[in-house]
Image (cartoon, rainbow, N blue to C red; front, side, top):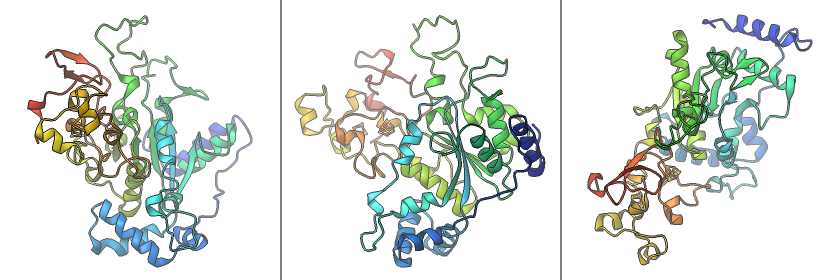
Length: 388
Ligand code: SF4
Ligand code: SF4
């Protein structure tokens, strides 16, 4: 598909859908509710909203001078989001819905039972999401067609990796279209593409090679015979406009809810991607390693390590490096934003970081205690290679 106009795209989708049922035009849009409307309806005062905006701007490293812009943008019309799922486990979506309600932002000073984070996310118009949306079948297809032909534009969110279906193997087919076709159609007029989770960002589990001794009966490379690839690699493969579409990777298996929400909110406020690292991840969330802010780091510096999950070191809360913790080489916000509405993170629960936000984490090789190369979550990094 070349760079088609929105009108052409709308006509072509209407024509495709008309083969299944009577669809003549895609011109009817639901009334658009602004965040201001939702705030008023939820009993949230302007003062409480401004307090939240200050917190949000600090989290996203936005200078306080840009606060009026942040407030203005947050109160503007809803931004349409089209959310596609490919080879995935629905864990990323499960994580995202856990942002509701976020007790850290509860507004006990008001009569509101809603949270600001909930309201901010509700300011997104989730126009297509197969798991959460009410319509099904052809009605769902009409919702997507209307969303991707919306003249006001949209953000495309994708979770899961894409199978290589170029040879027509049929690994991922929806009403006769391959995953690659579906991505291309939905990406054509997207303002930005947000790859949610490590599968969409880097290929993830479906792209894992697995242990060297794996015997795959299909003789195909890796665990999966589908030749899974990341969303960015698929877009690059399309060439043309798709190579230059802004892509933001929000990696993690799954990513933290506030990181997904914060990335979407940043785009809505600024109409551009935040500063990204070399893996296309927002530096505001992936700029530091999990190790840098870990509360067990003082034990790491003193050389006090847990050697087994029930030893005295484990009971004393020592560093989990020798139990395979990959915190020193993993960039994510787990020890700063934390998980489960700011409740805690894996090291607080006594388990090391698995490195889920890094490319190829399923296959990551590390040195074990005997100095052997191996694959496995519980093989540890060499302490000598880690900066304090
Ligand atoms: S190695 Fe793991 S447990 Fe130890 S300080 Fe770093 S992140 Fe925390
Ligand atoms: S602690 Fe490590 S494995 Fe766990 S969620 Fe964070 S980055 Fe992923």
